[in-house]
Image (cartoon, one colour):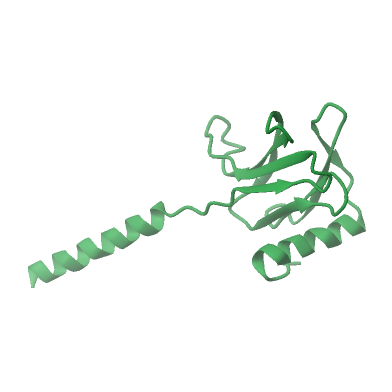
Length: 140
């Protein structure tokens, strides 16, 4: 009986370890509509800045894969999020359940991220991007 309990306990521990060690890998590489940029979207794993740990991070590269810029969005990975380019434009759209709204960025003349005002069109597209990723609309 004791051996059977030990075996069950051991199996339970193995399952817990496996579940806890599995981490969602949401790293994406998305080419801009113009083909001039590659956006790498990942979850920040650096603990150097605790306020930005586990937040969505953008890294922008040119066509030669040279690093141009990075940006910490502040959108937490604890909640669902989705990113894509605005069709036909070099504008990035992020919908974050953590923030509860869409955010958008253009690329300025220095190849840096420049936050731009969201419009109704961007808000609508952000929900479509979210639906494409999760097969459901974001919560209202």
